[in-house]
Image 1 (cartoon, rainbow, N blue to C red):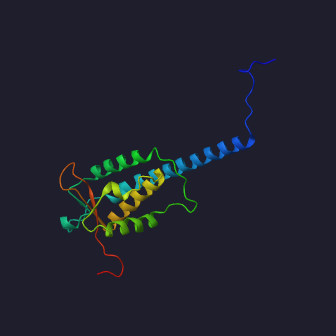
Image 2: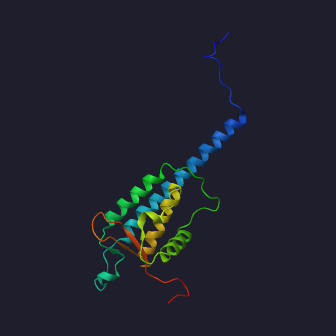
Image 3: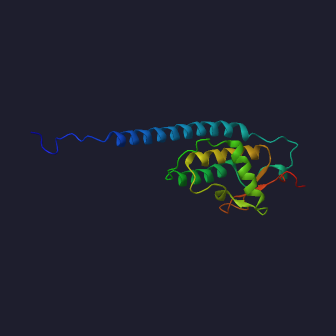
Length: 167
C-alpha cells in the first residue's frame, strides 16, 4: 500500500484546464510583448535619424534630452509594469488608438505632461509598449515635443498640433 507521499495527486479536470488556459494566456501575452519589443527596436532604428540640415532646432521633437534619456525613462516605466498582471483586451491594443489617447491626454495639459504619467500604472506590459510606440510615432510625425529643462528634471511631453476643429 503506497504511503501518503507516494499517492499520486489527481487534479480535478476543471482545475487542470483552468491552469492550462492561464498558461496559454500568459504565453500569448509574452509572445505579443516580444513582438512589440521587436517592433520597438525597428522603430528606434528608423525614427531617430539625423534631422535635415534645414530644420531649426526649435522644430526638433527632443529638446534638452537625448534619445538614450528617453529610452532610460521608458525602461523605468516598463520595469514598473512587469509586476502587473492584466488580461489582454479581446480587440487588442493598437498603436493608432494609443496615438489618439496620448494626444488627447497631452492636449488636456498644454503646459506639459510628465512622461511617466502618459502610461497607466495598472496597464499590462504590452499596453505600455504599444503606448511608447505610439509616442515614438507621434514624435516622428512632429505631433509631440519632448523636453527636459536640465539633467534629472522631469521629462515633459507637449502636443504640437491642435485638436481637429481648433486653430
